[in-house]
Image (cartoon, rainbow, N blue to C red; front, side, top):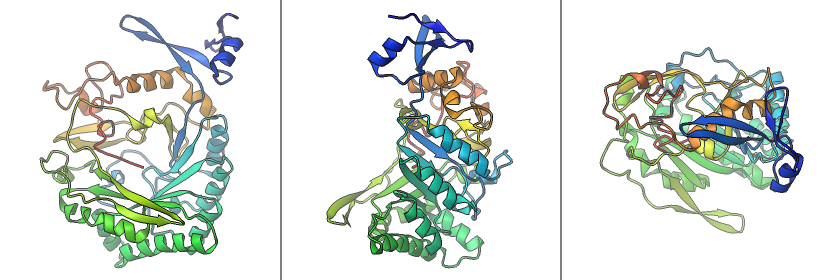
Length: 392
């Protein structure tokens, strides 16, 4: 077997015969990670399976619970050239299975979103859109169907209703529901498979009465799933609305029957975890996902893609954006395979972080999203890793 070689960039490349025998991607190299008792070897290869793209950080609503109320960024929308670079960069990932258009803005508010969707469709992978649904008019629905978008997740909860009223949309809920129904009807009328529909709902103390109505609403809309998430509160007032510290379970009913063509499916509610515990795992890391912000910055997850405060069990903490590279400056595959990113994914996969919520020590590390083990940033009290906060 050929020997391991050191490239000019300091990378240790694997022998070609070893790569072929193991079925690894060409260009796979090794990252050394110092451990307490020696060195760990990590494969660095373009094996991302999912990409979340924030085409805009702007929104047509102004929800009271949104991070947009408190973030320290100066968000804008993605330039067309940046988006082209992202899509071109994703071609280097042979295992890519899905692109999700989301983030903390409204994707449909981007003036070139239909063109973006059409370009992304060239990758021939699954595509998910998360939206508040207000801008999903007939013209937009036609463009979504043309691009073969396969999943639409509608954010709909009491906070959105309040935002409709604030925007003087007295019939906001009806408009969203009508838009969703029209999208499905247009698909069926044109002989196309309409997108799979899901609802996303943030549960709070003031919205509990809605929860048991969601399965019925989902059945009416032909939605196959409902994602329930706990609130990530950004103000002391909203901190009083959290439910994940209560003893009573959520008032959930059973699933619902759903006819799709000649098939009969069963709709399901995906409920969040309601208590902090020892079990922790990051779905972003497990699904080999990367997140591209509106400016081309690449982050490992939604939690670290912006800078903002939030409250966890009454304690305020400041999160700073964590960017591992920018697609405008280096190829996306190089960012994904960088030593820093490979080591970070390994650390999160093995959850080498303390558990700050139930620690009991009066330290201040967690206030700046750090921890006493020297991790910056830290996932020591991440609500996503606890599955307390969920996203599509």
